Image 1 (tube, helix red, strand yellow):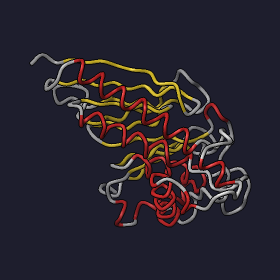
Image 2: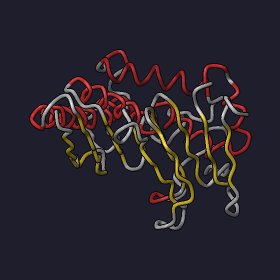
Image 3: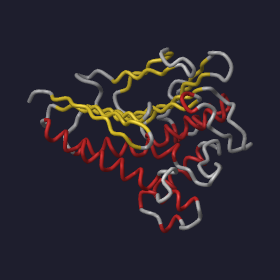
Image 4: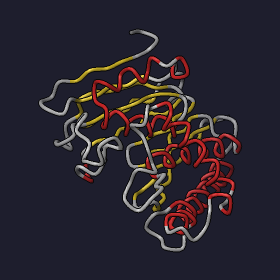
Length: 255
């Protein structure tokens, strides 16, 4: 069967989610059905997890109107995953330590992207990219055994790519100053995080990659020890220092 490729742009979460899919197993109608299901899913995620929509379950939870046990299963799952990520990050990722209460935004984007990839695979997609404002979940490579190439831009220079990673399957997430400026707070001090200007994390789980990227912006070089935990053997990082353009990386498999 001839290879079919198609793309979609989904406006939600206050950003544009870019989806690229291809397959030699199914045709365009099947891929488009998968994309339509993904669009429904990510918009449902926004209705549950948005901190900007007053009626969302997360907003109601933050206001103390409901308890976590009153929330949908997906929100309870993300709550528990955030607890685990907080422990693994030694407290540098803490969605409870923000103004207004629990904010899972630093986890749920990667978590939802992973779920979107699973939906697309169910509909026969083989090569998949789900790009949520620069945080990506990837599957199957780009084509013919070639990996996806992911460029990391300079924190202050939007047109300057400072590093390129090649990934067949997995997630890659970057956190830092970028468009939103100094928006990440250090849970240990309550002040703006000063550990790193930009942090990129790669691994099999999009939610954890997203969370650990945030944790490294908080912890900086001290955060390298997070990746010595045997539970994180499949995760690696690349970090741009707070001052200057010096960068460092850590891969537990190649320390």
